Image 1 (cartoon, rainbow, N blue to C red):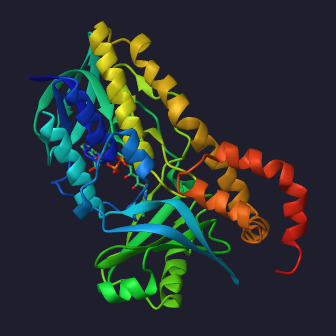
Image 2 (cartoon, rainbow, N blue to C red; image 1 turned 90 degrees about the vertical axis):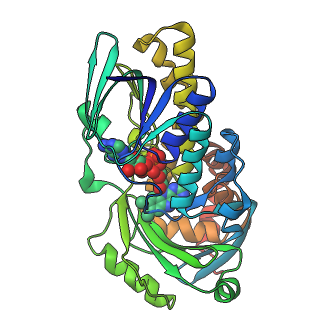
Length: 384
Ligand SMILES: Cc1cc2nc3c(=O)[nH]c(=O)nc-3n(C[C@H](O)[C@H](O)[C@H](O)COP(=O)(O)OP(=O)(O)OC[C@H]3O[C@@H](n4cnc5c(N)ncnc54)[C@H](O)[C@@H]3O)c2cc1C
């Protein structure tokens, strides 16, 4: 039976980042990935540079398909354009994820692709892992296997898929001139009544990503809403549209089990207001790796040591996501009031857009809004 210090399950942004930091620190690490890489992932591919910085990742220019520094917002008859503090990078997920995996391999991580984790058992202070091809022993397992995490299932943590947020995406080829004239360096965000979320258009190099996310109570007719949105913008999905669930947002209460740490979507880390998850996947991957390295230094693989991962997530990730969940509920539930109110207040809209795209946090946004509520309330009902 092959032995590794750390086994990471899943080669998405969470898994590859975790494997890279473990290997960099000298731990013998492997990534187990069920797909052949590069693999397709339903995603709009908007990456906030703050997440890359946290993980010391310098994206090569050829991976950045566009840098967008404006958001075109719309809701019913309202239209606004807001400049954001720092451009958001547009990437193609299969290439972006492959790059992160290659960085981990460069540091020494072994990639086991087309190999699916099937079962795991904790015995005598170590984990026995069974995949579709082999069996492995490890002291620590980092679960980065996404929304339907097999690791989480083996721990008996179930998901309520019925009310899960959902997102749909289509990649639409378009020539560069048309992208330039129609979208240039702007991402479009359209709030749609009854969707409890928004539709987007993200311009890339030779295509755009169009999609929509519904965050609090996905309507049954979500595909029709998407096709109507495309028609309204004279767009046609030429390939298969992809849809995927988004996790419950502020994470599971406990992220540490015997020898196991949950990261990324497997841990429930997605912004409930925007659907952004890549940043939190990478950050949690790094935090899990730092914890693993610390436990190896202390030769302590018990939960007493691993539990510091919970503390790190409580410091760097969970508070913002918990606020995003609350904000998401109120903004989408009462969108007839909240969105026009924001659209009518330039300063609020800028704060809101910058928070939406990762500059600033929801707590500060709420503290900023609270004393101004009466003014915002009155302005909402004045003619524009
Ligand atoms: C339509 C859509 C649009 C989105 N747009 C954005 C966006 O623009 N920006 C953003 O920040 N976030 C976006 N997100 C969210 C983002 O895609 C996720 O939060 C992110 O991919 C999570 O990364 P991860 O590494 O945790 O999991 P994933 O990227 O899902 O990777 C998990 C990996 O685990 C592998 N795996 C699963 N089970 C097993 C198993 N049993 N054995 C071995 N391997 C396994 C999978 O094959 C996969 O490669 C979007 C999501 C959707 C659905």
